[in-house]
Image (tube, rainbow, N blue to C red; front, top):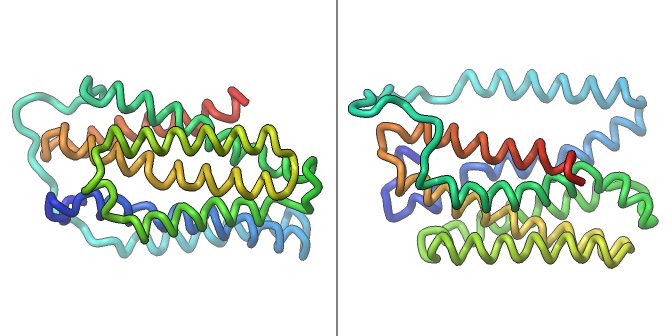
Length: 221
């Protein structure tokens, strides 16, 4: 995002986490296959191998020059981000709760496992991030995040009311649409409201809000 021109910042942010959601889409399928081949020991061993591979890849990331912070000291609480951050927490709460319990819910709905539903969720996010990458640059953040929150609420309602495999897949797709646009809109707000020299601390504050949703969602559910 530091290297992206201002008029394409939303597009860069949209591409930024495509790898994350590819992992969400493919990880459960790989995990269920390993579980069938060698039980939980094989599944956990596969997770260790993938984690080691990620660590090796991370060592090859390019290094950017450090920026000098001037003026105010680094902050982890940014008042202009609190209101949109609350919206992010609310949206992530729902998606995190779904991801935590969809494996149990899928079996209650007559499915063999949740791999297909999680693949649908991840694939929809990746597809939206690639096809509509410039949406955050063209659509006001409040409108885009409002659409994302409405889509997430609709997805949860479908999963709750339509307890059938079709309902699980449709709910996963709607939640995927929500996840694709919610954090993209918020990061666009982050990049425009926080000084360039302190975007690292701003991103840390944003990450804390996302983590509140990820940790709180399963507890709330």
